[in-house]
Length: 247
Image (cartoon, rainbow, N blue to C red; front, side, top):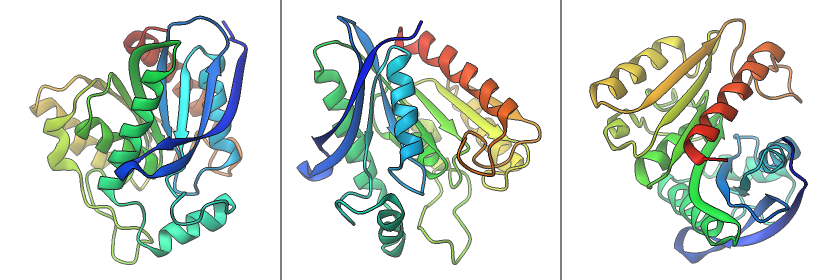
């Protein structure tokens, strides 16, 4: 079923009470609807990721994407804002958690909300989704090829991202991980390490890796796009959120 929906740019209260830009899309109807916080990739709060937000709303979810780079470059283009954030070492983990917490709070206050909220992120946003799911009480989380969860980036990488492997014990909700066999960050070896760590702590999770796919295979506007992997991945996401968020 496809829902009629509306989308708009709003301001939400993020980390420290800061007002930050966010993109909200919601189905038109009485609901109740589950919520999805969408965490954008390192290139930023761009048109392609806004389309993902609208896609979730058309599928029957309240979807909200905070602009994680709003403080660095309010009103700037996605490319310029991303460059400004990278120049400062990326988004601090504590600030990321606060911004996602603000997004969750905003979604739960929407009159048509069911009260259940999940999170999904891509690339650096996949790592940040894992961090959020280990720091906040969520109902579901989807990590799309998030690098930096197991191993910190090598010296010279444009952003600072400490390993999160020791946080696996804190995972608060079911986790879906979607990866490419040809990815180098995370590599299949890193995915296997995370798999083993989550299993050791008795966490609820499922990982799927796709052949002939590397990093960024969901990105329909990028050379890394892989049709078969993206279509199969979307099926996994839809089924996972339907099961845990109830839409």
